[in-house]
Image (cartoon, rainbow, N blue to C red; front, side, top):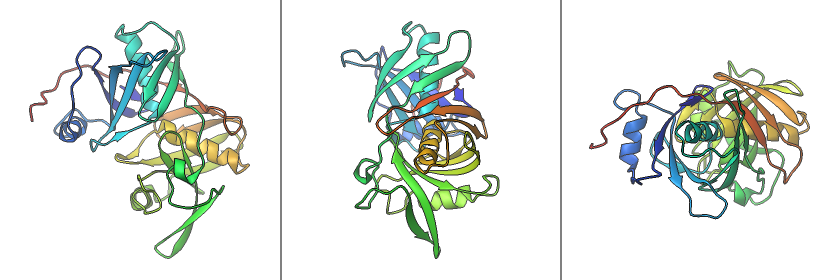
Amino acid sequence: MHGLGNDFVVLDFTQQRIDLSAEQAAHIADRHFGIGCDQILIVEPSNKPGIDFKYRILNADGSEVGQCGNGSRCFVRYVHEKGLSDKNPIKVETLTGEMTLNAHKGSNLVTVNMGAPRFEPADIPLALPQRQTLYSLEHNGEAIEFSALSMGNPHAVILVDDVATAPVLTLGAALEPHALFPEKANIGFMQINSRNDINLRVFERGSGETIACGSGTCAAVVAGIQRGLLDNKVTAHLRGGDLIIEWHSEGQPVMMTGPAETSFEGQIDLSI
């Protein structure tokens, strides 16, 4: 499946749970020797009251993470298409919290309650003692300003004049494992076109640059609103397409709306 070209292999473990090794996950994600994807999404039953499913996310390198916005839209489409649930919205638990997913009837659009962003350095995590709206680090003798927050996973957002010429691959790869980010970070490069319109590219932790990143888009819009640069509802243009992000104030959830599509179904031999 894919959300704006951010592509996923979705596995149904509701009847039989399989413990994927990091090596098996990386094999699935390999675009030459496996199926190929940015991340793997796993559907599991939940034993928590009021929660419909457990939603697990594995990066292309096999590491597990707590959030993926584009993946969450695919998740709800998958459980509906496979007849695993006819509820709408559905509630899921992730590694870092709970989410509400709402599929729009008659379209491929899904709105996701992404939860409230967190800004305290210990919650991101960010290896600095005090919360700030804007942080700075030095890279190759140059001071780089960034916003930092958690959307269930760590994000740093850098403002750029033009995403087309921004050093996403080189700077993203250098900053993802920076010592300021104890659990590494997703690095967003945001170009502001107007108070309700941005362009964005994201270098994702554990996957490299993807053509769309839902949680990264939420983080970028929240960062722009926190800095007084954006209004409360923003259209974000990513290489894979557009997302609509709405956020009103600290402590309130971020609402993300965008498409989800099924590409194909198949089987893979994991006896590697």
